[in-house]
Every structure is written in C-alpha cells, then in structure tokens.
Image 1 (tube, rainbow, N blue to C red):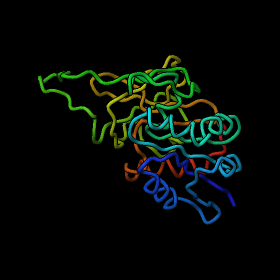
Image 2 (image 1 turned 90 degrees about the vertical axis):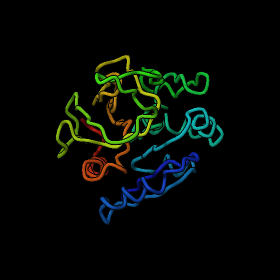
Image 3 (image 1 turned 135 degrees about the vertical axis):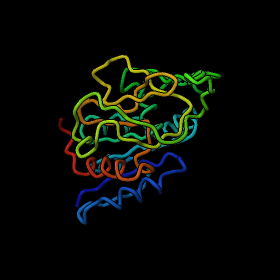
Amino acid sequence: MSKIVVLDYGSSNLRSVAKALETVATENQDIAITDNPKTVLNADKVVFPGQGAIGHCMKNLQEKKLDNVIKQCIKNKPFLGICLGLQSLMEHSDEDDGTKGLGIMSGNVIRFPNNAKDEKNNTYKIPAMGWNQVYQTKKHPLWSGIDDGSRFYFVHSYYVKMKNESDIAASTDYICRYTSAASRDNVFATQFHPEKSQRPGLTLLKNFLGWDGSI
C-alpha cells in the first residue's frame, strides 16, 4: 500500500485536496491528512497545499516542526506543493511585511501591483481569481495528458519570480508573466489549484500519484 499524506499545518482547503486525490487514487493508494512529523516522514509521497497568508503558514509549520520535515521529505520522495505550497518553497515573500520562506528554491514572492490596467484600460482585479491559461515551459511527467495552454483555477494576490529559469515548469499571464508551476528533481509545485481545476487538475493529481519522482 502506497501512503500519500496531505500536510496539515492549519490550512482550510485540506479536505478538498484530499478528496480530489481520492477521486483519482487506485485501491493501492491511501490518502491521509496529517500534521504528525513521523507520519509525514514515513509517507511515500507528500502533498503540501495551502491558502491564506504566508506568515501564518510559516509560523504554523515551525510550531508543528514541519518545516524541517518538509526539507527532509524533499530529499527523497515525490513532493507536490499547491498555492502557498509553492510560495513557501521560495527564499522570501513580500507578504506580511516580509516573510522568510523555506529556501528550497531560489526565488521571491511578489505582490501584484495595484491599479494595473489591461489593453482596454480596465483595472486588473486583485486577488487574481478564476481560470487562466498555463503555458508549459518544459516537459515533465506531471504534464502527461494535459494540453499546453490548458486552463486552471487560480486565487492569489502574490506571484512567484524564480531566479533560475531551469526551475520554471510553466508560466501564466496576469498583469505580468509569472511562474505558475515550478519543478526540480522530485519536487513539483503549482500556483493554481489542481483540486479546483476539473479534468486538467485531476489529470495532474493522477500523474503525481503515479510519479516515482524521476524526470
């Protein structure tokens, strides 16, 4: 039995992520929500979802001693980050008066500018909320069966700016072109919410459940 854990640090969307994973899991894959460090370390795969503010996220990770657990898991098992699960992997976020991230990937989290206008002089709404296209920038097993330019669901006021182009797995346009998926070795993380993205999102989650962490 393969054990997949959804990391519980106090986020509110854990059940929706777990339910989406259960929808595409095989009978030999067990999905569990946990904040127990030992359970996370013993899992075969780890999913780190999140929504809300990064300051609260990082504080809870540290209090539950899950920050170091994440760093350990990333060394040797397939790891999927979602929304804050992507942003938290970066070195720094401008949110909450500046917040230090886990520093697993080189990049910063920046807020979308206020009052930005589109080509029709309409003001962009913040947070960016709704469906948007995701343009794959490199091949990856998690993109299998997903067309380039497929639409995924987003809810965010901050975006990731990567320092290393090789870590960018996909980009999206909203006010600027930003990283909407990042990957390195056995780590894959998205700004969008696959659990809310219907067929393309479920396909990505199914691909993750079948992924051994190799490229």
